[in-house]
Image (tube, rainbow, N blue to C red; front, side, top):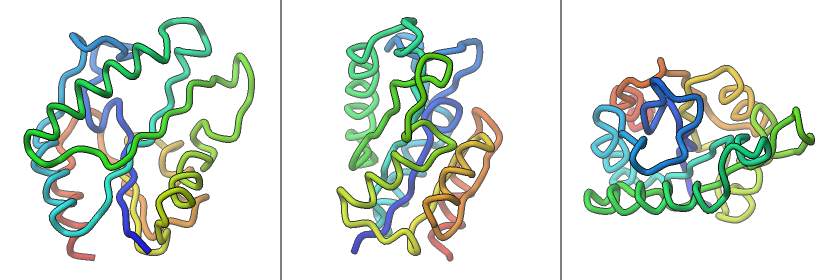
Length: 164
């Protein structure tokens, strides 16, 4: 079985300062030390799995194509430093439009990744910036979940995960 770190996107990987939704490449800005953090985790045998709520799709604010463009841009930049995600799961739903099982704080995206990628939840972690991220990770039975302040470096947490 694989071990993984599940990571939220907006506010953790990229800055969401000044934006309610980040869905355009020109608005996508990496938070400090992201590439170094992700590369360090990968070098230590962790799969990297992004899990992100993208409720603006259900609300008609942007499209799934917009999400794909942002993720392609992000992955290409991360690949330059061997820090790209092994998989990306996103929830295009929003409770105000229609409920689902994948929108955090529900663990659907994490559980699907565990199944798809043969991940051992007891050897896996989550890094998020909100209570709902942590709730999703705990509901999925992950070893430990870390809540970080929005738009800050996750490097200290990456180092802590490696030492656990």
